Image (cartoon, rainbow, N blue to C red):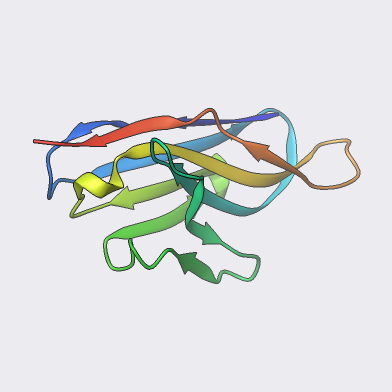
Length: 120
């Protein structure tokens, strides 16, 4: 099983971008999907995360601009990013707890990262 992130690219300030993270393989269950980002020289930080029960947590810096959502049928989580700013430039990583079919517990998985560059 694995997570694959996609959708990064170059966008102008004020623009929008949607990231996707698809879980592949034989999966019994997924929980706590989320997006993190790491800018050059900085530590990886939480951007948005969906907790069990449906509660969503956003970083203060993206509240009102970013929206995380999931499609259970496609085992995919999205990050809709609007009103992008140069300080949003980073490598974005998805993370989720996956329970592989035939497995006995959840384990944390990370996607490979997708670069988002906000620049004019």
